[in-house]
Image 1 (spheres, rainbow, N blue to C red):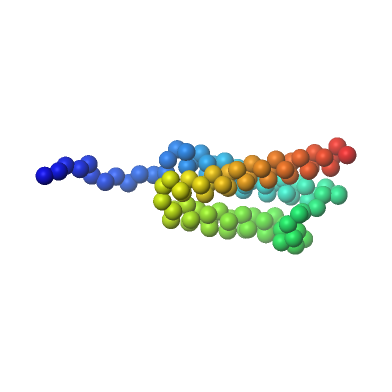
Image 2 (tube, helix red, strand yellow; image 1 turned 180 degrees about the horizontal axis):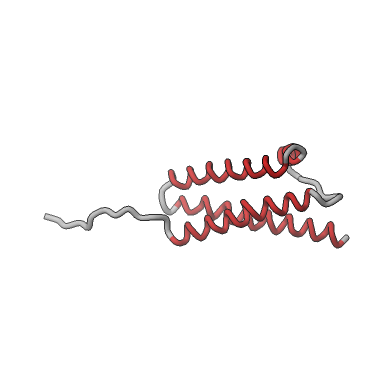
Length: 114
């Protein structure tokens, strides 16, 4: 005989939740806001040709939809991949978001102070 504890449904770890919050704050909101602000400053251009094309038509709506689609896709991957590999999904988005938001902020400050 053997006794096992009944299986419990567990939610995401505190680390995962924190990384998703950082990813939403920086990749979602920070990048979106700094892109829109930067795009409104004379002399600042978008490097990505796809995003540049999208910014020319309904910038806020298109970028918000694009960000939402990216989050839905990566959230699905996060749910599908097993631990410990799944932590890489919000970690990657969080790191990318911090870097891109910092880059955009630097470009904006350079344009404003020049």
